[in-house]
Image 1 (spheres, rainbow, N blue to C red):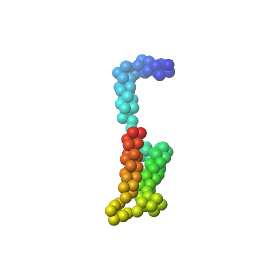
Image 2 (tube, one colour):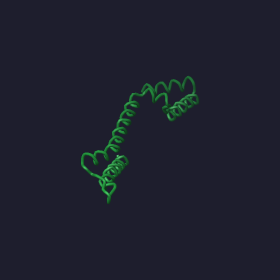
Image 3 (tube, helix red, strand yellow):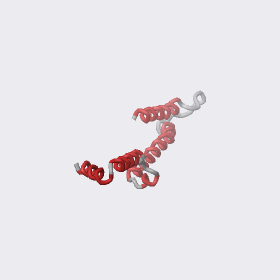
Image 4 (cartoon, rainbow, N blue to C red):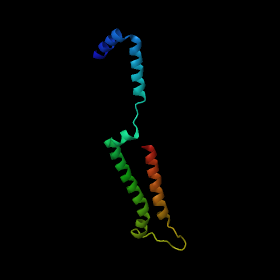
Length: 107
């Protein structure tokens, strides 16, 4: 109600053309009101998302690099002359990578 009364007051005092120009200017400002890089640095959620992303990347990278060592040393998948690379040593990281890729795309 206050906005309508203010608009009517401005129309009577300034004229309708001036009011339309002001409204068009406000509308254009709202449309192009995006954040620049400085505004993102002032957001707390920017840092939270960045930290979560980095921790997830570290967890995935450590898992992918340590998994073959775990399979070889703890579970005993050893290389033989017939099979220099055991199938499980190659299949488990590949399956893990494909599964994480599918869930990244799906979610």
